[in-house]
Length: 232
Image (cartoon, rainbow, N blue to C red; front, side, top):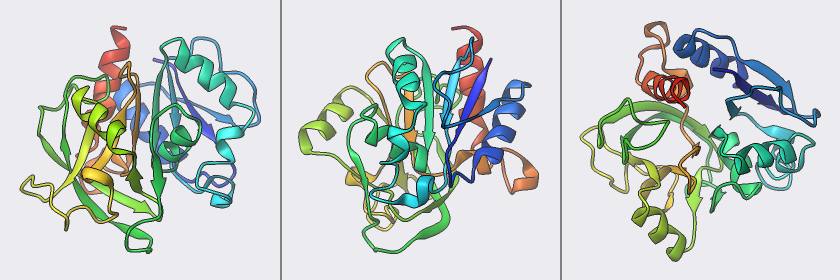
């Protein structure tokens, strides 16, 4: 599997993402600077990692969504390519129109840096098939603009089409207000595209893929990707 991690000015999670992908696939991903205008031949997966692209000026992800590499990413998506966006990567995907909705300022108006618990809402995707539906796992969160928002029609469509990937919950699996620290609509932490080949999520599964990191809760996501693309 050939994975490409995009690097924007201000990205800071590309190395963590590379470690996670290499652990799951056995292959080191390519890190590609945003000023390039094309993806390497044979690219199977594009990853937009976390950080603060372009200093989060204008809106988080707004400038990165207009980087020279993004037309190639949009073309890759149109061909059915697989794309993962985490935290700032999720913000970039919404700003680029590759996923619906927007990421707003956290309801508390404070930057959140802590662990959260997520419930897997669907196991029917290339990113989640190594979990059982409604499995609970822990993931670190680190963002100031992680409050997922979409209009009611969009939210209803995401629910009806089984495109909510993850939801913020308590350790017991309840989607309560207290578990929803950033105020996201319907406790949504991650969503899928219509063809289920693009995932955007706010928490960081790449930070829990080894016992030396404090746990392996996030590893099934990368194992899901590796297994899915190995047979694609």
